[in-house]
Length: 77
Image 1 (cartoon, rainbow, N blue to C red):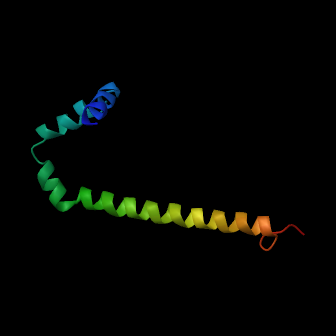
Image 2 (tube, one colour):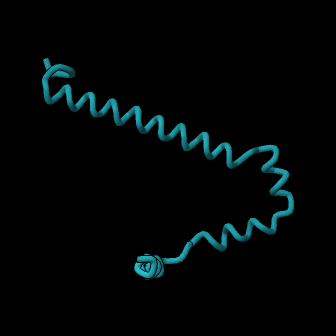
Image 3 (cartoon, rainbow, N blue to C red):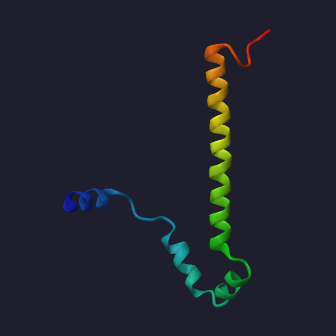
């Protein structure tokens, strides 16, 4: 099973951003900047916010669709 997964993974293309991300290793003050602006924490908060907003709109969409199917909410007059 592991061999099958390694064959499937080997068929996928390489990471196109690897060279770009590796170039950040040469920036000497990146660690200090990350201390003042915690990029990892900002990304976590942004991802949580995005999940909450998408969830909210998904629930609103489902409520509207169920209301349209049953004729209870959002009927045309």
